[in-house]
Image (tube, rainbow, N blue to C red; front, side, top):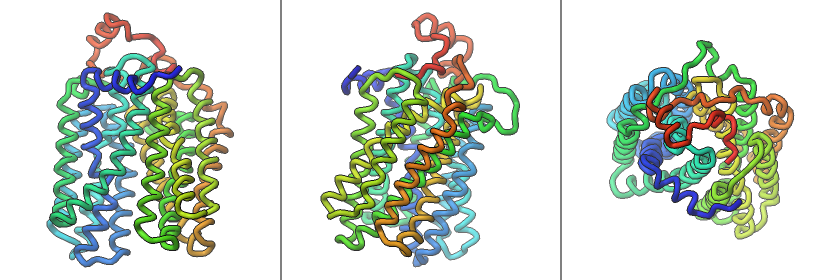
Length: 430
């Protein structure tokens, strides 16, 4: 049943919702722009492309290690005690890089490692807050879709903001400004009432944490390959642009990919869905894989832009649906950690995609670089298909995500408002 854009307006009008979304997006700017900012800064300092890539890779690896660990810390200690201190420490790492420069390689690598390791898990934290803020299942699912759309906007505008700051000021100033904004965004989130009062559900002590869920492991395996597909497209698109007009063409292709994701996310979130989200996710990933195949034909620029837009249409819906599935399969008391694992795995897959696509393009040409994306999409679908029995059995059937309005008062308030239905987390099928 279609809901129209009014469904999104309904979410943003909910108390705290717009502030939490905006604060999280601004708080994640340093993470979203780090690769671009690090590369531009390193080049401005006279460093080589190899050094720029090495520093960006060090940041990415540290970030992949830190996100699930900090997500677990949020589940154990609450959001303000983790999110704000880590945002400050991460920003200080980038400040150190901006002040010290790249003259001392140990200092430069240590600075980016600290910045990446202590990046606050704001994305997972926001998704843990949505159920308590919005209440109804359909609104929570729509919020996931809105979140995915907003991220596409952030990952498009964030790098543009960095390049603007570099052109108007300097690469070092860009690092400082972006990270100050990130701290302010995190501060806006953690001082809000939902974040201050949110408590994770009690958890069973286990060293694996969220990873003891077979369903979550299956999902992570699939989204590693989705990330690989997306990462390989970025490299293949550079190779395509080199032979069809240069950087401007690359910009058009990436804009088309982002536009497709925006359109897909808006349409997906504006509709009310029924049925098991695990089954719906398989369909979405199948369509995503299908969309990743045609760019390997490498037609002329207008047709290629259209193919890239089509390839992006099912990305945001697949991500939104994946977060619903994560919520159903995360063990009790591990929801922030579980969300952070998905973000991390997707990012690691994207990094692997860029690493794989580079040699493939050099040895086999642009078309084969795009073929890597198609292969990644098919691999993701195969993982979901092979693990369908595991994914069909969520580990939780009651609301165990925790409260965004505090313990026991939250239960009273939810009952009063008629939004405390048992089984909320098992039926996020908006």
